[in-house]
Length: 414
Image (cartoon, rainbow, N blue to C red; front, side, top):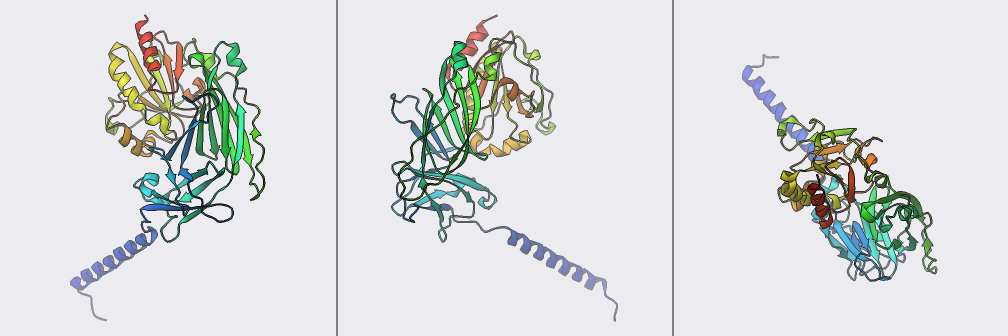
């Protein structure tokens, strides 16, 4: 065998490298699924396999009786996605078409899944189904069967709040299946009235009383069994155990505000971007003499993210007079950078390029952490602390004019 010349060796090595790069690229392409159709196509049918026309489809259904006449049904507000209001409606063929971008964002849908809620109110049919990002193509629409729903009702009360002179003003119920929260209810009179498709649920019930007092939470397990097709409607299922105890926050009203401990991360607006998020902690003791708004929020609750600019405005307008704001994210995320990634679409849509001008922190989830200490079991939840360091009130909407009025009243006090 002859000796290999240097030039031949170089050519051989380059050829091997090219072959290796080509093989790796080919394998990578094999692992990446092709982009599915831009539209997610669902086909809704009943138990007999017939198309269901006129059904509403979304990922979240919000029911509220605020502003309605006594005895009138609650208003239904649907969301196609957390930041996309409205519902899709099935046509005469039972077909629903929804933009994949609105559901999954512009990341590859194959990497995710969503839970779709479909309801036909007049026919009392419904379904809650998990849909994978690659399903529901033009060639193979995703079929969803709607089954008879069960009428569930009950009345939320709180004798403890009544005895404290802070009677219950409204109740909030989050219907959960696993970690999914498809239905959220606000009942100003405490009366619950809803229809649920078959499945196992957890009902997370809380309430608010006069002056921002809280009640609950109480968690109830509920299983709706499938009903045989053609069987007569079942009697409404009445829930018991809806008398809520006074909440943790109620005990704090008028008392010294507990210090902020067991916080996993702090981010300061004046800290260099490359310095990371493990900034020095903020203490309420260091803010004594200021009015503090402690705002609890979570990437899992768009209703706590969308109104955040209201806090930006409050801080901009009142910081010079002594207002301090702290945004405390719950422990559902592993880091503040992870929070950034998960809230990107909502921030771009609703924050209009703005960022917090106040500290942002991440709760550790410990028993002595801020959320547990202040009873922030549902978000958004804003706590006002006066100049003397005492808890004044709480609000579940940062855009509520009463929040600004309470802050300004506290600022005017010595």
